Image 1 (tube, rainbow, N blue to C red):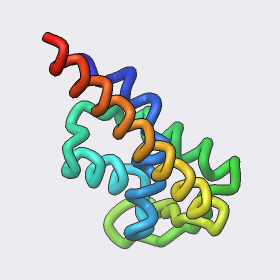
Image 2: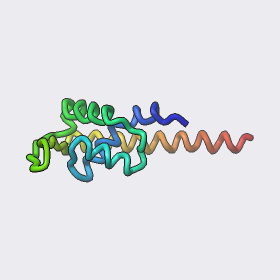
Image 3: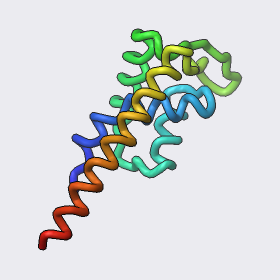
Image 4: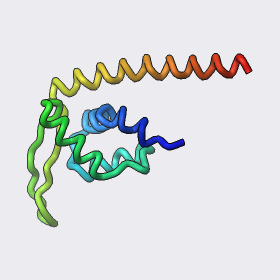
Length: 110
């Protein structure tokens, strides 16, 4: 199954959930999403999502100097982002139950 379309619909939620655990810079967030099972996620998609969520006020950012390379821009979740994540978690839970029920009912008919 091609999950790219599914991922587009939940990428905001996945990024917010990842950053809600611990602040992270762009590639760190990508790495954590991949470790969580989203192996095919594109770097550019995550970076674009981080910028968009920051512009929307769901994330804050700060720069941390690095002795071994360029400074890193870290992202953290704001109160608005926490509220958005809660709403998205609730919506996801309802959606997942609905789809699971549809699939279970379809299996019962065959």
